[in-house]
Image (cartoon, rainbow, N blue to C red; front, side):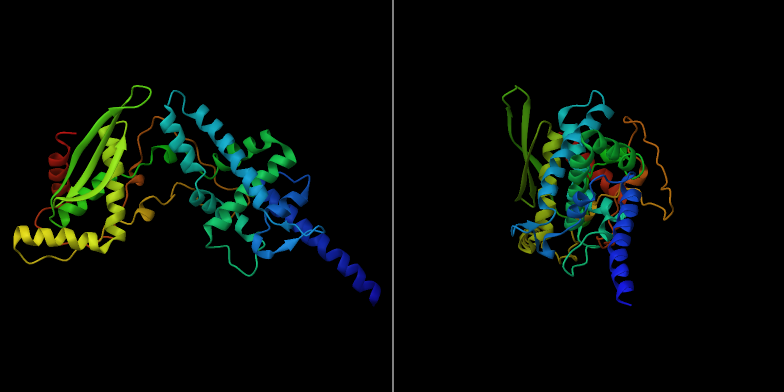
Length: 337
């Protein structure tokens, strides 16, 4: 009897390690050489393990390494994919691809979140834990198989099967349009004022604008074009409308003094986190072979599917259609931009 117990105790860890090998193969597309690296990549600090020298054993060091490797690998891929594009476009695209939200969602789609060892915490809704584990796995791949293996993993597994790189690059939230829509629906006056035009150290023009709503100061924005500056100012102002009830109160107090009319219900500003949610990740079908997605032309226009909804805004009764209101607002606000 005791012999059988010993045999079972030997088989159990072997069986678990074999299952881990199989799971990693499904995720990575290859079998690990040094399984210990991948085990550490999946070990969250909440477990509190220590080695024989008393040092913490978790995935934080591998996460640090993977973050650096990802920046280099994705930068390389973006540089080659978008031939001739300027630095700002390339930087913005890389930032979207390696953002914590993107990596967290990728970890869930690939099943990495199911392998993370943590101290009683569910990782299924923790994008930071999942995203950190994704970075740590990239660090493990780098130490186990080298830079070229990391490149193949990102190109063949991520950017061919799970992410449409062109959709990532050309998806842009038009914060200016959202702010115009909010102001029109709430019948408040909104304008952009040019504050400053200067040049940077390379001689490129730099514009600074500020949003004013009912004469009250909104956020400022700076960019290499008026459009970019207005986008940044609009985004900051929308954030204030979401987070500062007193700002909205002040706006409608000024409007009340101006119109001397009964106020209509205040419409909530769009939720920026929802607008910027990384919805460009292709959800996998639960089969052995995930659906492959062809990469679009880098110069293709944004798909109509990229258009953003305003589900978090309550409709306000109005005589004109939404299209008519937006068209009139944009014509008035953009005529000098």
